[in-house]
Image (tube, rainbow over all chains, first blue to last red; front, side, top):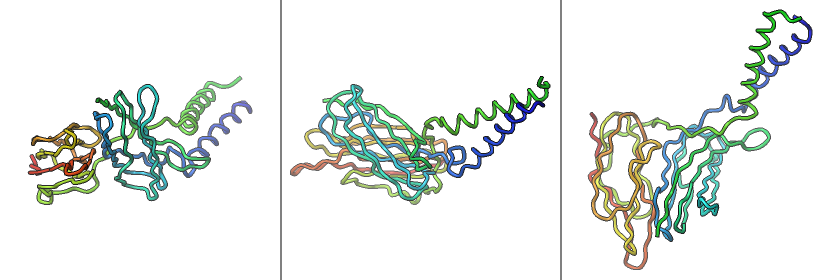
Amino acid sequence: MRPVAAIVLLAVVASIVTVLLLPDHPVVDPEPRLLALVAPRSAVAGERYVLYAGLSDLPAESVVLVRLCHDDGDCVLERATRIQEGGVWWGWIGAFVAPAGSYTGRIFVRAPGRGGDRSIAAAAWSLRVHD
Amino acid sequence: MIRPAALLVLTVAALLGRQVFDRALHAPELVLTAGPPTECVSAAEIVADQVLYVNGMVRLPLCSPGVLRFTLSGTAVHGQGAHAHVTVGPEVHWDGEVIEARHFAVPLNAPAWITISFLNDRREGPDDRNLWISDLGFEAY
């Protein structure tokens, strides 16, 4: 094997080992699981509705973000909930009052990591609000 | 000139390295996946009749195949009844308004969390929107 090829090969192997040994790398983190997402699929304009979620395998200090936006862009709910302890969590994640229209809701889970939080999971649902 | 064996090793190593770096530096957003319950409730432990006077959620971790039966009814404010939401694991089984008694039979084929929730509590003067859960029971197959 030529020296150049050997150097490239060693660099690749060293990189693989380095990445696999990083302590808070996504490859080795548990994947959050959605136990339930309680969010209405239809609603009445002007009424107040609440949302709940159940999650498991959460890393400690995770943040659950929920956003509910009209398909034209205006959001009626944007909220973040920090969860101190990891593991299983059930709770209230937000509430909204919306005018009539079609909406898309999204829930994100972000976990702390070196260099800042990162998104590790996401889910979406649709909502129709009528008068 | 690079020998064929060395070229093969180099190619495999490069592909493997690319995959690892793709996961490390461009980790895609993962879809939340369903999680089974880590604890189980038995049929005898289920409370048959419950009233949700404020927004809330009844959670049942069920671990054996069977059917969960219950009846929902609600009261209205400004003509709008209680908004009930029933999930089986991450799936929505039913979502809608309840005033008159409505009977449910939710089949369960695998361990899952079942939730029954009240989402639009409201009180104005003598009118109070509530959700009643009655005859809640689980029959294992």
